[in-house]
Image 1 (cartoon, helix red, strand yellow):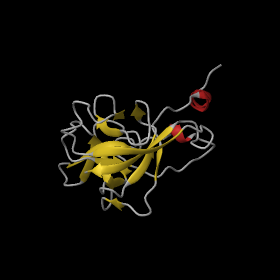
Image 2 (tube, rainbow, N blue to C red):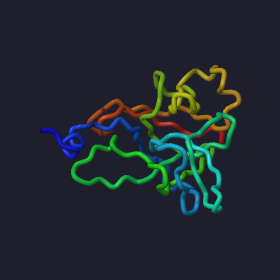
Image 3 (cartoon, helix red, strand yellow):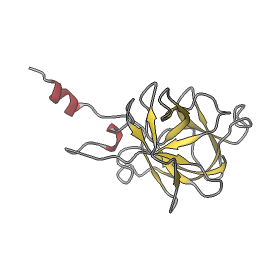
Length: 171
């Protein structure tokens, strides 16, 4: 006989994960409430306000909008995998403010072949950072642009997901 708890214990999360690599990062004071839909960590987001005047966050909807990084700390219980975590609607999330030539982070939310010196921007349609040679059609108008500075394929080190390290070159 099945149970809800057994099913939950057997499912493996596929949510994006990452790390902040800069010594100090600027964050939005008091974070922001997730609205609309759940958001994976270490993906690009945009900010707004709700009817009560509280700061809100949702997944980036247009590359031309001011872009931030959602990077909430995970609290692991009962051996949960790092890929089990995401930012649920109504929860308060940590929002990182990008600083050019300073903010560096790892993310598993990417597509393309990472190599040092390539470029990236966030694609709202796929909810991933697109890695390319700098000639992608949306790259020119993207408000946030990134440089690939490293990639980590050691799955044991990255807790199950390959990561790419990005540095902000335009914010």
